Image (tube, rainbow, N blue to C red):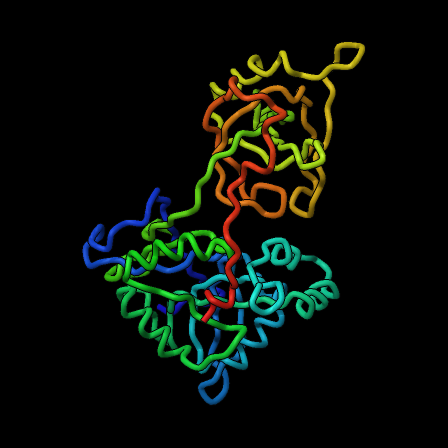
Length: 356
């Protein structure tokens, strides 16, 4: 049965693997494509008059509707798609001058705003692009049970000649080219590479695909910690690096500790807790954003003396793009030696070279 906004389909998910697998790692072979760093989106282009497109709805990974936040995409999809369909893809916002474009996560995240006037303004200032990578239905016919190779061929035929801001992602069965993409496309703000079984059907909410993301390590300073939501133990450790002027900057956090580790960290970090003249722990607050509105952003301050090694995928400005993962304590490192200079920055790559 064809998915609809009233009966939405859950996106097919991906399982993380450490390296790009060989094509024969899966029966029937693999197709590789860039991993876009945007908002996962299911586009429902409903039938209109004379076989054209009528209403358009955009669902998120959790089936929450994103339609109102991207009016320029809704208009483009209605005008440019050759007929009714259901597409799986990603919403991204490219910024920068031609020849130096890259994905802009901050500009994309600002598009989720409650005020209609603000949404309309941002639709003009930072217009979005929809990158399609799967075809789930064409007309009234569901494609969910068809193998990916067939779905992808149908997607290419269906979107052939459709102009920007609608595009389809690149694909290849050449594993060496996929490995090049993993390195080169990061410079344009992409997130890694995805591998899909060529003979696999579309499996909603199941981790059938494989994703390979960038992973690096850095030695960082423990700035403080937040209490876990349960009220017991350390929920997350705030991380810092020294900039060129010698200022210690908050660059993100590390979390996902076990119950036992959370409790042990309270005692482990106790000697580093900053205290006032009465002996009470000194607390601070991290900057609020639209994502932290209403949340407790307070933390217990620590003397910046303890160094830890963390794994991270990429930077967004001067912060880790995602929550880092704890690797180990580094008692051999001096906190002052933990600077931004150690970070591995990708070579710039024009987004125009990735988009088709």
